Length: 283
Image (tube, rainbow, N blue to C red):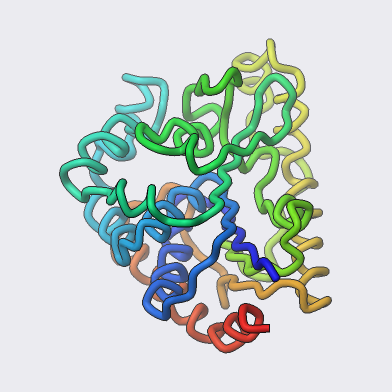
């Protein structure tokens, strides 16, 4: 039986996922099939390379660094994230990513991004993700706040637009059972009406009508995917690790104390699910 691991995004709420994945690593819980978008895909990198606590070190030491995330970067480069710093100096010198361990890992890692021409999700494999992490950049490039990324013949943005919780993708790929890590509590639903300022969306993306449609329907898509997660959970096809209480930070939180609290919630919630996850993997 093949069990998939599905990782939601969520910006700096991904500190929760960092805590969950560190518990998995410390308890030698590994998955051969991983699907992630945006912050979920970023967190998966260090999990696959076996670098426990690396994601913690990143958000604790560098999220407040303007080279990582800043309005200045947005004005200067067109992207609120300093991707050249994140995937350059940070990943090579400051907190080196173990490229060799990542390359050796026998993992089917799929990273989702949104094709702006069609408004649909496109997933890339582990070989596509290798340095310089272009697929990860694409998956993490938020609408209005980041530039589009050209890769493999596609023009791409944030994977969470078209497939925010890629559980169905994993199931359709043959993984009947899955562990799903969410960054919102069980009560959370998005508003059906898009939160993106319509005038800005239409001005910036007027040449991409399918992307505009995807942005406008993002709330309803997210809520449908949440219901699918709940259905799979009820059928005992999925073990879901989700925040045990609402995460009271936004997607761009920089306060290290708040991020540590979110990380620790991920640790505690994952520990509570260990027996259930082990049972799923064993059976």
